[in-house]
Image (cartoon, rainbow, N blue to C red; front, side, top):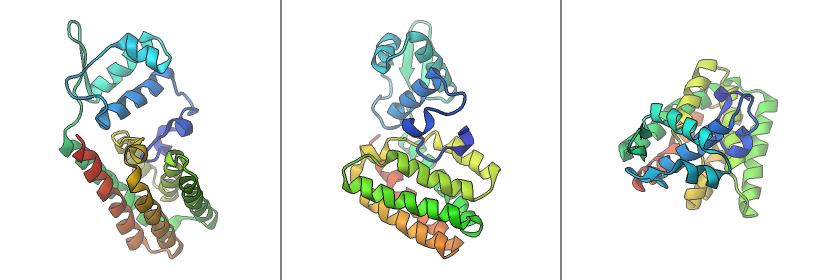
Length: 224
């Protein structure tokens, strides 16, 4: 599974075994997620040794991860002041979700015309599994990731998938855990999207997908 295969919320269970994945990559994903959800506040100083101990690794991969996040504008590293969280502004969070909405909406529109019967059955099965997991009180983060990933793959556009993967890095992977109250709405929208794909209705698939990101955008940007 390469980076271009990632859905909007790349979860540890689904991406930890990715070819070429390193400790630094895993640490970077965790730190990025904490920054995007506001767990690390702007201006907060990070102790590399403390972070390493918490994540069960040494200082070196934590430092390398911080260097990577510095290039993304999320952290600042300086010889005397150490590592400082820069974070993201609420408008940036909102813009990231809106961009993902447009890209994923276009992918869903294309998928409605290009998805195969086997792929549609896979997407529908994941949607059903998500509802069962939610009713059982289990995490739906990973099946949610797979649900969107399969739709993105079905659009058959490598360029579009690459853009989605790049934008998806700025979307908190733990969103559904931070805002569990959004889960029922998300599951209903998944059902609507599956039905639109089944009808080969590209316009409806795009509309449902774009709406799917509207509430998350407001929720996440509102807590910052």
